[in-house]
Image 1 (tube, helix red, strand yellow):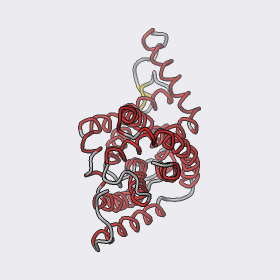
Image 2 (spheres, helix red, strand yellow):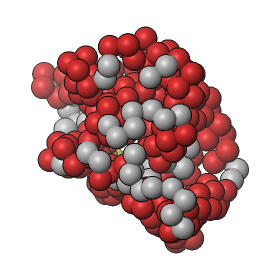
Image 3 (cartoon, one colour):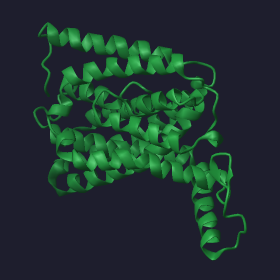
Image 4 (tube, one colour):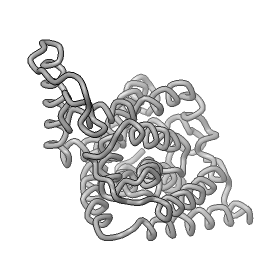
Amino acid sequence: MNLLQAIILGIVQGLSEFIPISSTAHLVIASRLTHLYEGQPEQLTATIAVLQLGTLLAVFVYFAADIFNISAAFVRDHWAFLTRKRRNFSGTHGIRPMWLSEEAWLGWLVIIGSIPIGVIGLVFKKVIEGEATKNLWLIGAMLILIAVLLAIAEIVGSKRREIRDFGIVDAVVVGLAQVLALIPGASRSGSTIMGGLLVGQKREAAARFSFLLSIPAITASGLLELKQALEGGIPPESFMPLFVGTIVAAIAGYLSIWFLLAFLRKNSTAVFIVYRLILGATILILLWQGIISPQI
């Protein structure tokens, strides 16, 4: 990997990680165009995971206040429960246990929603890292499939519920939807926003929860792949360009978070659905005509 390749991949990763158009699909395409790690899918997987640490940094910076409030409330409420410093330990406040604040409850929802992708990711780790998940037939098909499912979610979802209204069903449904992100072309944000809309969440609320839910998953996969990269998964000469690419991904990721939240306050996901359909169909047609090959 050279510096130009790293910058290009950093920009692509940052812009596409949070916008529901599939970062993996675009990174695989970008790696093809820049001739990066041809025939070496494991190195490309490691590179993508490390670049995700840049977008993780963007989430931490953008949602710093939310993360601090959730963490502080989680510790405070559970300490009060353990030391019996509160009296109201029975009953519920709507769907939330009475002894938990909204912020602490949101912390539990993030934990619950992260369990499915953690379990499935570990079980199928070798498959995810392998050549099969870089196949353009699969990527093109998933771009179209999630576009269709997202369109259905837009039609049937009530889009009335804010984050303060979320319960365990929200966490489970969105968490299961996030598992689809393990399949290239699905998109983590696209899948989770789709799941959120299906259970009646407002678009912006679904996107915010999607970003918060991405923290455990991206942290785990990024740190695991970083460890493997340092142990030989990525050539030593690629370390410095990859560091630069990760910083670029962080900057681009921050801007894409700001853009998507502002966009979804007033607009639907229709433009992303159309884009996915066009890109997916284009990839499948090029494959069908033999213009491009399905593998790296």
